[in-house]
Image 1 (spheres, rainbow, N blue to C red):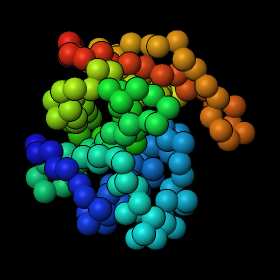
Image 2: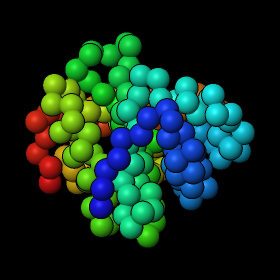
Image 3: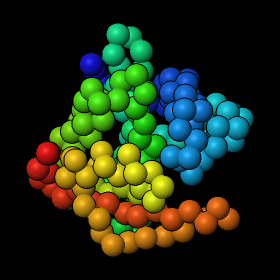
Length: 162
């Protein structure tokens, strides 16, 4: 299993894996398959601005993806994990842990890693908590009219991967 850092020139790779993620787990993400499927090359390339996209590759197939971003309203030593997904055939094989560990080790000056997890995504929450993420107490409704709520989790640095 290898980790690859994507660049804007890898937008096609990102498009393929992101659309697979949205098709496989539509309720796990705020975005929508049909919306992102219609994105142009320019829009895909734009998603790399101020973000680090990484993928996990096993046997020449992309089996996991994650995005790390800073937030202008947050301290500079915090990063958010977003768009995290692991191919169903590769879940429970260490792909998720490998993605998170890579990002954390790549940015040793980041004090806190944050992620929003939807209330109705118990499996994702359990995976994050097994790695040591803890609730921050922050909750918010999604910006759409779905009524769904998400909660922010935090992994403090240095992490104690469980």
